[in-house]
Image (cartoon, rainbow, N blue to C red):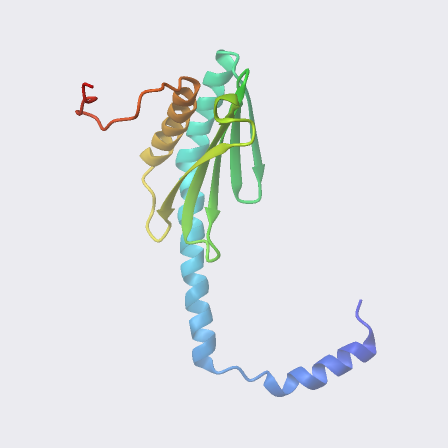
Length: 168
């Protein structure tokens, strides 16, 4: 696999530095232990909440003949819904360089906003603690709500609940 001369050269430079202080190794072990906890929280959330909720969503979309696609890549799950003149996509992933957050992006695009524009709603959850399963259903409903709202863009400004438009 490696050239023998290369191995000898490399080892001659590395061997003097093979004595790693125990405290440095302890810190590495602690970091790996925490990382395993984050990964386990993400795995449990995906297995017990996101995947069952996605399965229900796919069944509902299929029953109503809504064109969609579900894909996975690495630690990412993507759900894309296609409509006649727009699409929306929900991307669920474990992210951040230390993988401490679960996040999802809701991306919608269509002719009403212009062909080259899209809107990205991002929510992040900390994986240091387990995420309640209800979050998966809420996020899927938020995704579907954003997609439906974007189909009916009104010229009226959005106002907070309970307030009224000024008469003018």
